[in-house]
Length: 523
Image (cartoon, rainbow, N blue to C red; front, side):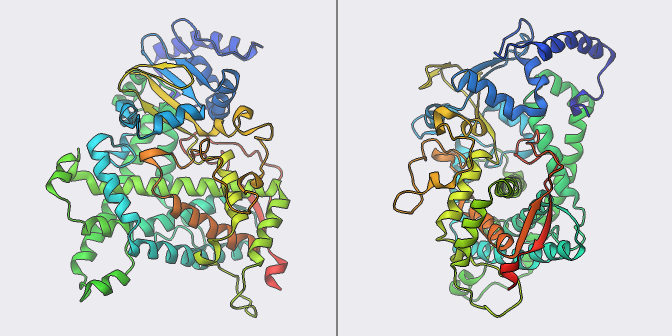
């Protein structure tokens, strides 16, 4: 299949494409692997040729160019992109001292326009207000209680029954699809207070989930296409932009329904008689945002006060659902290649006293059970190092600057930093950088080491560090513990597992597995 944006080419565009074919053909057969900025077209032909393996291509060119390289678009586009995976550059760009000079920029806003002015896309005063409010809500006791309850309930009543059904029917399942469904339901509960039931027997189709996937795919393709071409397709509502537009309609309808439903529920609800009882209630993020009384100064800093709840909801749903499911999928794939790591995790889980040793029910662990498991934590970090859920991110440049690598950046340039490539650099992680070795995260004292924090940017760094880090890790630990302790997974060998071209690092064709009850757990 071809790229979605090739659909709808006009006759003149086809002629241009044929002319470019010969250039692309020469690139296919050339033995030289160095990146060349060609006259007129820049490095665009290389990007088009490698769009099916864009993450590995970027890693390859960064490996060949000392971790930082300039990519140029066609001459008429004026596009200049500095790609880097140098930890020194990232520490510089993301630091408090230089934070104001490296914003999301107009380019980010245009490419990720579906996010509106939400926290993931906002800059300046709007971002500061949203960050302050979100930070308060994520630390709220009522929300933290909901996180713990949701993880346990969704594992026990959603994940385990679906896996048991797969065992009884002796049929392979797509584990990536299961992980997406789990995180979509869990994230919907945490954000909107409603369980869509995506992870239930029969695995029902949820249009909103597919719409998020479609939007995700198109957003990454937008990075490889000049702005004029995106604008043309958008105006004509053709190709990848039609796919994006259709997804947007579904997403907005879903979110509008959740907001209106939650508002009606809150208006009709009898308030608790005192603050003490209120604190004992669990609360989703949408509820906390609706309860929050925003001051005039805060309201003035928002670019789109009328769409604040909509933008906040889509940002939270997209971030929570996609990233954690991608991380879990790659984690289980890595375990299938490294049985000794799986054995160590099982040993650690088995050391936790079982409060109901005589029951035949599958065991579900609490967050308190899992908080102190060092090897499980290290294994998750190691998986995230090799397969970061957000493999690429980018920044705009406000004022001229010189990065620690010696590269000069100017206003109008885009900086793309590859977390995916960083985990594959021998100069950064050593000659065993491609090995899945959780031990690198454990100190001689048997605790998680902080030695790697200057080259581990999976959860971002500086003022924009990930607010949902704790929520995501808690979800992953709950899923991994229940699945490994109660079931055995066998990844089918007749499948190609590779990264999908999307802004979130899912696998291209899912992850098909056979599943059985684990004998030790059943005993």
